[in-house]
Each structure stands twice: as structure tokens, then as C-alpha cells.
Length: 493
Ligand SMILES: Nc1ncnc2c1ncn2[C@@H]1O[C@H](COP(=O)(O)OP(=O)(O)OP(=O)(O)O)[C@@H](O)[C@H]1O
Image (cartoon, rainbow, N blue to C red; front, side, top):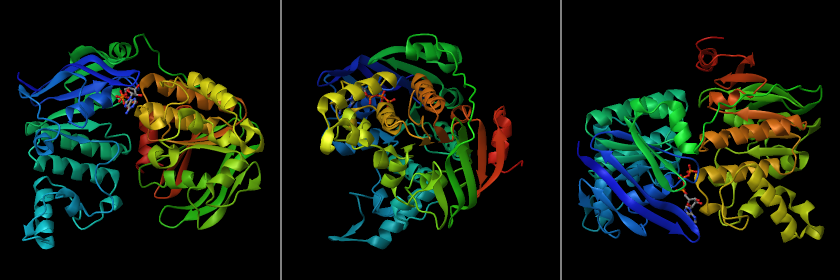
């Protein structure tokens, strides 16, 4: 079969870091090809080179056997390749129609023909069966809708190669199935796709072949049918890895975090929740269940219309994150780009932010102490970085997530609230992060784990399942996937 896309012997350096070291990939026409590897392996760097956003230092990129266009020729790139990123390329303050026709508006003379623009946008979305209002602001779309708009936009430029970079990281089970349905039909129409994910079961479900990168190099390319799961993991990590075993906990009687009578219009109603020292409580449910809104209320990112949040028995000022942190909460937010870290600050500054007061006198942080603490966190969470002084914005996605985690743990919180804690982290790093939650719990913290991942919920002593804004069931440890999913989907109570 002909190769639709090829990257050969690509080298890319960022200062002292070699992000790609002679790596390559060959993607056959019409296939869905997975690219997997640990955090920092070089996947996103390859994406930026395959989409013409960055030049390679060495090596070449070919589309259908022809050399890639020069970087400045954006139109030529758009006709060849598009990427649906974790972070959207869509502009939130513009409408869907404007986003679709940015830089190619239907003009009448010098004036933009808005009616024409909307009609064209509607026609385009209809062609690709995307049911989204073209007048809606892109910022108001759900993650799923936004991805569909991005795919339609890519196809409308004539691109027959689409890269999906961790597209399921923020989708619930039903939305993932819809995305896969759409990917299958794109494939039937001959579209070639590259699929990046840390969910290896998805790779087996939706891809025909897989390429593994490790430490900036190409390790193997194989048909998924010929590469069993354990061999795939071994290729990624360079060693045999066993599945994570959740540990038993012994909760104390003391309640460290509770919410009483919490209601937030349109999100959740009449919630009572309490978490003991030494206990892990899960929150599960579909995207509309209210679980994230509830967790965000516990940490002060949202303010409930009524009800109280208490940490260690004392009420916390509603809707006030600093007050929640002072009261003893540590948290990992859903959107690390907005609430998680400050990209221009260093790994050390971000990770030790909550304890800045304690690291130096009179509010001045001693650089030596910050560095020592940061070194410890980098080692414990296995963060791949040049060192504590590197800006977090330069880290790979999964490693940035670990910095957010480090920050949540740094002040020995009485209660930990983590939302989709392992989003974007690799199979081995997941184990390190879940282990870090269990370590904190063994030191006496209580934890709330909000997740779409059943594997994350396995460390929970009980899982509260939410449905349409209410807690419908308190499921003790020992559930099967099928049982929990049935309750989450409201099929079974
Ligand atoms: N702009 C940059 N400046 C400095 N280093 C960078 C930059 N971009 C990437 N890197 C480094 O290059 C390496 C490869 O990163 P890349 O983002 O490609 O990894 P990845 O495989 O996509 O990881 P993840 O699974 O975490 O998303 C990392 O060590 C990262 O820190």
C-alpha cells in the first residue's frame, strides 16, 4: 500500500533537550495509525513537524511521496493535514461560522457577507453531519462539538490526513463511542488518520497499526493485531510492567472534607458528601452528571447557590480557592492550562507555590530550599524535565500534569480533590500518580477522585455515582466495570 504520510530520520532539539532523535513514521493511505509513547517521548513534537508548525533540524516529511511544502505556505499545509488538539485551535470569542471561514470569508467588495458566510458554514457542517448552530460562540461549544467543527474545517480545506492528539481525554464514554463511529466512517471515505492516545485499549479498538516512540526514537511499527498489549507496553516503557494494584485503606472516624446541602442551579442538587481521613471517595458519572461542578465547588472554583463546604470540621468561604487551600485542601483541576499552572514560571516555582510562605522568612522564598523541595517532587513523580528552573510551558503535556499534581501534594493536604488526575499521562506515570494519592491517604489525608477512567476509580473505597446532578448510588469497592457503567448511564440503580 502507498504511504500517505512519511517522516524520515527526524531530529529536533530544544536547547539541551533532544525531542526527536532520528525518529520517523510511515502511515499507509487510508489507515488509522496510532502513535504511542511515554510522556515526553516526542509525539507532540512530531505532530508539530507533520503539521508544518515547526521545522525539523534534520530529516524530511513527505505527503503522498512528495516533499512537504515550505513552512510559510500555510494554505498548502492546510490542504494536506490538520490536527485536532487537546487544546483547541478554535477561537472561543468568534462564532462557529467565523471559525470555519476565518481568513477565507465570503466578501462582497471589502465587506464581509455575513449571511453568505453563515449559509456556507451551515452547508459545510451539514455535509459532514455536524449538528451545531453556526451562530453559537465557539467558546460555548462542548469539547465534542468543538472537535467535530475542527474535523469539518480540516476536511473543508481538502485535507485527507487528520491527526487526532488525545481526542478522548475530555470526553465521556458515550461521546467517545460517537467519535469512534465518526472516525470509522471517515476511514471508509478514505481519510488517513494518526491517533495519539495514552489509552491503549482505544488503540486496539480504532487503529490498524501502531508506532511506538521511546526517548525520542522510533522503537517499533506493527499491525495492532500482531502486537499484544503487554508487548506494546514493554516497547513503550522498555521493561515489563504489571498492572497497578490498589491498596487497602483504613479510614479513621474523623471527617476531613464534607459538603452539606449543596445545590448549584443547572449542575447539581441537594448533595451531601463526606470524606474521612484515610479514605478515597470516587465521583463518577457522565459529562452531564454534575461531578466536575461538584468537585470544583469543594475546592472553591465554583460557588454553590446553597449549602456549606467544611474542611476539618470548619466551614470554608464559598467560591474562594485561596481560602480552600489555606484550610488544607490540595487539588488537581480539570483544565490544567487554565487553573493548573503558570506556563512561564519554572517547574520549581509552580510545584512549590502553595508552600512559598514556609520556604523562606518574610515571604521571600529561599531559592536553595525551593530547589531542594522541587528536586524531591521531580524525583518522586518522575517528571521529565531539564530541572526545577525549566518553564512548565516547555514540558510535554503529561509532565505538566505531573507538576500540577506535585503542587496539589506539596503542602501535605488534609484533603485532596483530583479531577481526571491521569488525563494525558502515560501508562507508567498513571501508576506513580495513583500511588501518590494513596501515599497521601496513608499519611492521613482524605481524597476525592473525580474521573472518567475506571482505572482511576479502582483506588476508591467507595464510588458515588452521579446522574443528572444527584448522587444516585454509593458503590463500595469490588464493582465490575459493567456494574459501574450501568449505574453511570442510569440503566441500573
Ligand atoms: N518548546 C519546547 N522547549 C523546550 N523543550 C521542549 C519544547 N517542546 C517540547 N520539549 C521537550 O521535548 C520532549 C518531547 O516532548 P513532546 O511534547 O513531544 O512529548 P510527548 O511524547 O508529546 O509527551 P506527552 O505524552 O506528555 O504529551 C520533552 O522532553 C519536552 O520537554
